[in-house]
Amino acid sequence: MKDSAIVFVESNTSGTGRMFLQSAADLGFRPILLSANSSRYEFGAGGVAQEIFCDTSSIAEILKTCRRLEDRFIIKALWSSSEYYTTASAAVSQKLGLPGPDCFAVERCRDKNSQRQVTASLHVSAPRSLMARTTKSIQAAAADIGPPIVLKPVSGSGASA
Image (cartoon, rainbow, N blue to C red; front, side, top):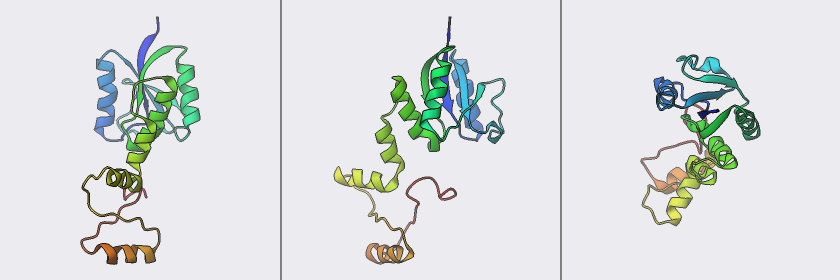
């Protein structure tokens, strides 16, 4: 009989990453961590989760790895506790017929400009926002909006943009 598994595509690198894996195990699932570089995780998944090398930058590779895992496990869920992998996780979940968020919705939520356009179309109140790609367009946007101004990358966090 195959074990039921929850597959994690990468993880956040804080202590909560290990907590997610441990919680899956505590609930009776086999936690499996797909990672391109397991040394990123100071908490070490060893003992808590089965670690499998996978090119997690590729949806096709994540899907191929999961298809191989289906020979040994019943995959009940696939997700990531790292925001950077939520779109790929949602896409693979959909391809595997697993429950999870719509990957197009996740992609729009992760892109701040797209998110602003969607909320504006729904008449949701939000601070004014303009897309600016050059120093000149940033200056023009700042003059148009007026202070205070917050500059944010379209995706990711300030440290990784």
